[in-house]
Structure formats: C-alpha cells, structure tokens
Amino acid sequence: MDLLTDSKAFQRTCRQWRADGLRTALVPTMGFFHDGHVSLMRWARANAERVAVSLFVNPTQFGPEEDLAAYPRDPERDAARAREAGVDVLFTPTPGTLYAPGHATWVQVPELAEHLCGKTRPVHFRGVATVVTKLLLLATPTVAVFGEKDWQQLAIIRRMVRDLDIPVQIVGRPIFREPDGLAMSSRNVYLAPDERAQAPNLHQGLRLAADMVAQGERDADKVLAAVRDHYARTLPLGRLDYLAFVTPDTIQPTTDLAVRTRLAVAMYLGKARLIDNVDVNPNPAA
Ligand code: AMP
Image (cartoon, rainbow, N blue to C red):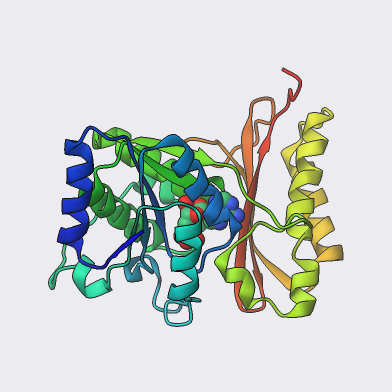
C-alpha cells in the first residue's frame, strides 16, 4: 500500500490507473477506522481493480463549537487496517495541502440540507459536499463508496453528482453495527460506560417504529410518540436532537407512511452526538 500526502501525487497515481483502463474505487473517510469503514474498503476491494482511501478530518465540515480538535485519530493503526483490507493507496493530506490559501469555492445542496443534521450543523453539508467534490476531481474514480449510516450525506452526494454531471457511480453500503445494534462510529469512543450501555436503545427505538409500520400503523405521530417514550425509558442520559420521518431521496419531513420512508434520529449522549436511521417499509413482503 502506498501512503500519499500530496494532492498532485495522488492525482497523478489515480490518473495513471484510469489511463491503464482500470476500474477504480474511492472510499472517503475521516479515519479512526472501525469495522464499518473496513466493510466499505472490502466492498471496494471486491468490486474494483484499484482502491484508494482518503483519510482527512475535514475542518470545513465542523462548526466552531464542534469536536474538530478532539476528533479521534490513530494514523498508524488506520494504515495497518487499510493495508489489511487490501487498499492500494491511502491518501492523507493535511488541511494546508488540500485547501489552498484563500479557498473561496463551495458546493452546496441546500434543499437536501434544510432538515435533520443540516439544521443543527449549518455549515456541515457545505463542507462535506465541497471536500467530496475535491476528492472526486482528484481521484476521478469509477465508483465512490459511502455508508448509509450518514443517510442525509449520501442523499446529498448522490444529488450533487447527478446535478454536476460528475462521472462517478455512487454506492451506498449498509450500516455496520456492534453485536448489540449500536451503529459503529469513530465518535463512539466518546461514550462513558453508562452511556455506552444505554446507546443500543437508539437503534432499538428505530426498529420498534419500523415494526409498528410494517404491522399496519400509519399514524406518524403515534409512531414517533412510541419511540420518544422508548427513549425516555431506556436512554435517560440522552438528549434528543431530532427524530423524524423523511422522504428517502429528498430528505423532506413526511407523515405519509403508506410509502417507504426513512426514520432518522440524532441524540446527544455525553460528549457524543449519535446518529442512526432505518428503512421504514409499509409492505415489507412486497
Ligand atoms: P467517517 O470517517 O465517519 O466520515 O465515515 C467515512 C465513511 O464511512 C462514510 O461514508 C460513512 O457513512 C461510512 N460509515 C461510518 N460508519 C459506518 C458504519 N457503521 N457502517 C457503514 N458505513 C459507515
């Protein structure tokens, strides 16, 4: 595995792959790898001839009060895990090499960033869309792989790629979970033991809602009340940021449970802010 820190060197390597006619995959990450990240790398390894992973804690997607300085990092362990997963190039730029002085260009998809995380984190998706555009332009991969854990991010990237005619296939992969159901996240290390013990209830609440709808319930308020009640009982250390049914592709709030929706949640728990989501399908057998 090659470790590259220079944008131009990364671009040259990826260009050569394309010139050689190879199918290439890019997996953008912020590092501190867990099995969820590795599942994306493995998918890429199995479905492309060359795999690049970017590891960049992107400052522009953090708000001023957020955890940029504290974000967990372990570059050596990350390099070892990427190597084990069969990654060809690990690209680890510094902020100064990825953003030129006086960087003034932004990519935004405001309609899809109005709700859920976009509301609490106003600059977040502008930072994500911009850095992903930069990485896609550097790597020009055949496919780029993202996790469904960040559902709103995935929807925004799909729309951005479509609207800007960026020639890449976007692949979304399922949420990788701990055995107790907690979605894996680099930020889970922020949890104290008592918080970690309550955290799996976040996913359980979503499952409860998906089951209610699968069994015929169509009253969104009733379903949301049942989930809030579950959280009040099982996650007393948590503070709900949002819990909402949204349209899966346009990320608009909805109460129409006769069609497929996504139920998304964000909860503050100690120093962490956890997010999760599930598919809510009124006709699971169909
Ligand atoms: P991050 O390093 O947190 O920015 O995540 C990098 C990529 O890994 C994003 O596409 C995430 O959606 C994805 N990812 C993070 N956690 C998980 C998980 N538990 N399961 C699957 N994909 C994940």
